Amino acid sequence: MANVAAPPRASQAKPAAAGSGFGIFAWFVLAYNILVVLWGAYVRATGSGAGCGDHWPLCNGQVTPHSGSVATLIEFTHRASSGIDLALVAVLILWAFRAFPKGHAARPGAVLSGVFLMTEALIGAGLVLFDQVAKNPSLTHAWSLAVHLINTLTLLACLTLTAWWGTGKPRVRLRGRARWVAAATLAAVMLLGVSGAIAALGDTLFPAPSLAAGFAQDLSPTANLFVRLRVLHPMLAAGVGTWLLFFAGSAMERARVAAIAVMTLVVAQIAAGGLNLLLLAPVWMQLVHLLLADLLWVALVLTIAQSSSADSAGYAPGGAGGPSLPSSAASR
Image (cartoon, rainbow, N blue to C red):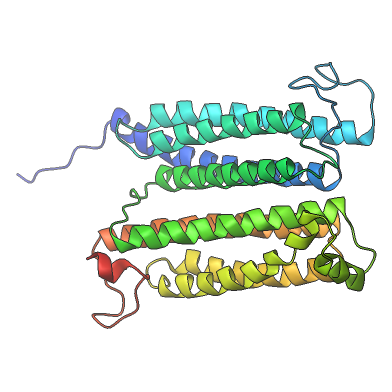
């Protein structure tokens, strides 16, 4: 008599269903965080960081300000959206532990997302309490922004990987040269992001009335350090962008969609950067530039994750002589 496979029990089907719903929710949380990051940039670009005074987490000593300036409304909205973010990531962590067994990568991914969200909130609080906001031209302000940006990118990477793992994808396993190439690539993009944040701060603190005046500011030996550093950002963008095009092209057969996204976003970023310069960095263009940067970062993390998964599965694109992610051949 033929054996008939028994239908899966409800308890067996539940984790898969929970995991599927978790993945959708994790991608939503990532998208929400990108919106929060953009609003934070709007706070900085409009000089509204001091809108709630030197109070934190209260706004001008109140839980919800009943009156105030536009800057107060902008800053309070950012704090409120960050509070919602904390709740969303808390749900993400609890859901990860309920939906996946011990040892599943989504669990530590969700926990690390929570850790870096907390440090994100603490850094934001420090910026307010130590007056590293609004029109503060101090070098400490630049360092604070750099730390804040690096933490933000790390948070987005953790959320991206949590969503990736939550949809059933394998762990990221990089070995040998592949690990160092991926780390160096991510570090280069972080450095580029920091230079962009400092350039944006220079544009906010010392706006130029014309393109010619902006170039004159950049080259003046008496200009503020933030202004003189602005010229470094496009130079770094050219170098890092060229490497990213090569890196993504080499990963094309392993992570086609993500690699194409990286290449497309690099070209879009260069175009947006040029337009931002020509338009003298209006706030809306700064936000578009930042949005593209965040999407590029997410696409890069996914490219590395998917390429790693293909390597772990023994994938050999194009046969023995085919192209490979710069690193994989040496790591085998």
